[in-house]
Each structure stands twice: as structure tokens, then as C-alpha cells.
Image (cartoon, rainbow, N blue to C red; front, side, top):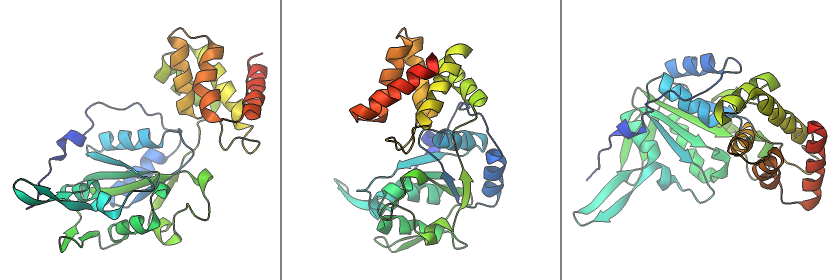
Length: 270
């Protein structure tokens, strides 16, 4: 027995706010027309997930998002048999739902998954566009509206945690980074509902933190963190406390690095 799935719950009703920073919208739309798989590369909190949500809305497609993790198995993506009072029932996994019914399947931070899990996507990312379900003895041909999108942060690459070349070369890639200061301030102002001066101050703080990358920090403050700090400040928290809670404390646990970051932020605001 197979449980059918209605993907209407995965459709995005309202337009998500997204501010293009380059030609990423045009590239994605061209990839969608040809149903090419897309890989989004960029630091955490720079807008990759929001971009996918925006494109799903723009293209009128359901969006099934999977947050990859090290314990994720192929069955978590493809599906499994479950026992019910009615008997044994097959439940499609999120990837199979998108393949069978059409839509965008977004595998977020794909490098967090085991490599033996990610190979399940290979037959979907070439001319075959099929998903073998070995447990069911079924070969699922991709719906005409199916598209696979993955994302990862190249800054966290290591010999153990990286995509295989055989996986990377199957995708069209779009490179993401933090917006230029003027645009980032506009985004923070819009998303955090703060005034332009406060938004510019937060962006200046981000620049200070990003200058410390490689000097105790793996990454500087993301645009997402600036929005969090801005919302705290808009809620009546002092800027100093908002920055400390929204940026300094989450970004590092090292007391010396926190002190250096605090000094850099103080200099930025002086």
C-alpha cells in the first residue's frame, strides 16, 4: 500500500522578501526551464534559503525543504515501510514526494549528510532523472516539474566533510556572499524594522567582525545575525546589549575572541 501525498501545504502563498544582488534570479530561472539541478554556495546566513523560497514562490512551485544532518539516511530521503493497524504501508520520503508529484526539493547544508546518503541523488541529477526505490522495487521517473536544489557552506570544507567531485559536477552553481554595505543596510532596515542609521551601524559592526575571520573566528556576523540584533534593538534593548546577545555571544565561546570582537565593535561605533 502506498500513501499518496498532496503537496499543496508546501506551496508558498505570500511573496518572501528577497533583494537580488546579482544575476542569481536569471540563472535559477534558466536552470528551472531546463530542469537542471542547482547548487547554492555561500556562508551561513547570507540568504540562500530565502532565495530558494522566493524562487519557489516566483515559479509557483511547492518547496520541500530538508535540513541535512550526519544521522540522515537514504531512507530519510527516499521513504520507508511503516506498520499501521491496516498493515504495512509505504511512506514516501521528502525527496520521493517531490520526485513523484513535482516541485522543488531543497537539501539544505548537504555536506552535513553522510556521503553514502547523498549518492541517492545521483540518478536524479543527470539525463536519467529517476529515483530507484530498492525497498519497493520501484523506479520513479521524475515529474516534469521536479527540480533538485542543494546548498552548502564552502567555508566549512574539510577532507571529511565535503561534496564529492562526482556530485558537485552534476549541478549548476550559484555563488552567494554577504551583500555590499548599502544593500545589506537596506535588507536589515526592511527585515528588522529599524531606522537607516541603526541599520548602517549594524552593517559596520558586521564588517568589523568579518575582518577577524581567520583570527579566532571561522566566520563574521551574518546578515541573519544583524537582523536578530536589529529586532532586539527595535524591541527596546540597548544597541550594546542587542549586539552582545545577537552577535557576540552566538558567534564564539572563546573569551579572548569575544573581548577582541567587543573592542573592534566599540571602535566601529566610536
